[in-house]
Length: 178
Image 1 (cartoon, helix red, strand yellow):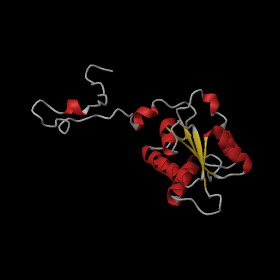
Image 2: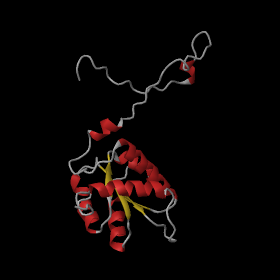
Image 3: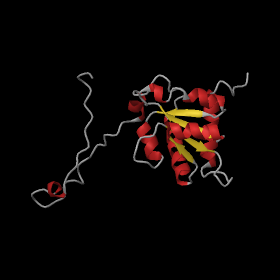
Image 4: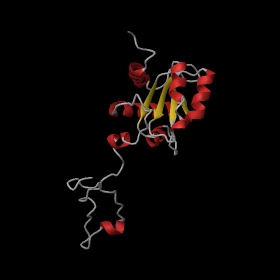
């Protein structure tokens, strides 16, 4: 960090007692509180070497939105163990993998396994955000968004699903046409 760059401000919590000034006016309305959540670019600095294809900022937001909808409609498999079990049982869909999983051995076999089963996949920068989108308190290393619900109907957010599958297939060497 050079001398010209300023350190990022931390989010400050102000109690109600502190927010009142001595003259009785509320001073918290005039203060600006800076959020300390990392940006997309900062999260991209923490990804591992296997995280390719990495979704763009816009696609990452779409992926998180799709994961949230799939989680609410019960058409989601969370975690490495469940994803592999779903692939063995014949589930198809879109795999979304976090790029900041360490140690790398936890998920290094997934891209090859997904390519063998012809399941498109994308990487997103943060496992914490992926877990939050999947409606869990824990970070999630990967999810499989199933293309159909258990009752055979299409999932909610089919347009998001189709857009992300098309983007994932652009990067897949097996699905490219010469």
